[in-house]
Amino acid sequence: MQYRVTPTDGTKISALGLGCMRFPGFALGRPDQKAAEAIIRRACEQGINYLDTAYLYPGNEQCVGLALERLGLRDKVLLATKLPHGSCKRSEDFDRLFDEQLRRLRRDHIDYYLIHNITSPLQWERLQSLGIESWIARQKASGRIRNIGFSYHGSAGDFPVMLEAFSWDFCQIQYNYLNEHYQAGTAGLRAAASRGLAVFVMEPLLGGRLAQHLPPEAERILERAATPELSTPAAWGLSWVWNHPEVTMLLSGMSSPEQVDENAAVAASALPHSMGARQLEAIEQVVEVFQRLERVPCTGCNYCMPCPQGINIPGCFSAYNASYAHSWFTGVSQYFTASAIRSGRPKLATNCVRCGACKRHCPQHIDIPERLDDVRRRLTPGPVGAALKLLGKR
Ligand code: SF4
Ligand code: SF4
Image (cartoon, rainbow, N blue to C red; front, side):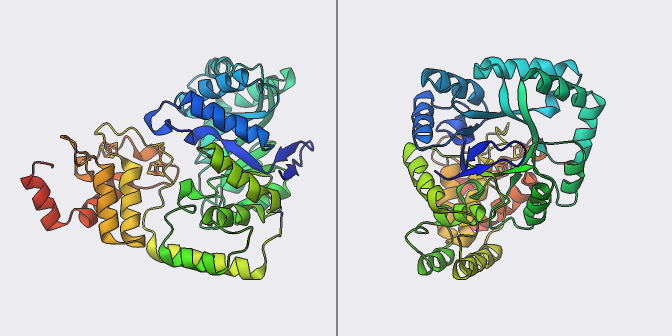
């Protein structure tokens, strides 16, 4: 395993961290405990020493806490979790939520605590007005919080404002070869590192979109430039992130022990500046292909779920993108599967009643009801829609 050192206190962190959000069962809100334990065990065997969870990942903190205890790893890993700041209405809520997190995680401290999903500095200002700065100071003094940071999904312009707003130890940004100029982006990565913060990267493979089912044209580009170390799209995507010396660690939401092995093998050799000009050029060409073909920047994070109408929102967007990247038939077939068309009560994009419950949770700022309309238009055009109506499916 490759380790990188935090600029704040020299802690050695594995370049590959385990994002626990995508354990099997996560889409149903019930992480599979046995599967999660197998993944965590393998991750630690491979030298991974950083695990990331959050209050808002359903059942996840409890699952991680129990797994670490059963595996005897409770004090052997660096553990990160996050404050659901939207649930903080009064200053007492900080302690109430944090105590609950410690109970769920079976721990007396958190190594890396993040303000979860900041999309605007106004959210931080609201927390300041509730006294969060003195609360953080107390937790750090007592050792209950070792490092404080924030995860970010806001604009490039607001990111420097957040960096200035507090004396953070670290930040967590979305970063991958398609997002160089999106959210914090490369400029944000460099700004954070130059301020002496450890920078952790999330979505290095955009929720799997850069790992599998790439547009065939993009796959061919990567195959032509492949090396023994860069033999899969996932290896390309992860290596591109690790190529940046400003990155302290990247989180991958691994969902099987085999995936842990694959990513750990890549981490061993993907050092800063290890990609050559030919490889970086191949990535640029792949970016061009994506920019031409991908339509909705959904990462499949599920933050917008569940939809009260039962619509599988990320499934709809994945199918929509596939209809451009692969073929219209592939997209339609995926869409019908995602919408449970064979069941008695399919949940198509047409079921959307525009209640807006999903939209405010989307870290990619997708206008979900609007884009579901695009899904409907493309994947159930006139005759298909009429046929579904006849069959009583819509
Ligand atoms: S706006 Fe549509 S997709 Fe979003 S939660 Fe409401 S019904 Fe579901
Ligand atoms: S629509 Fe947004 S919130 Fe929903 S899964 Fe996609 S990226 Fe996540």
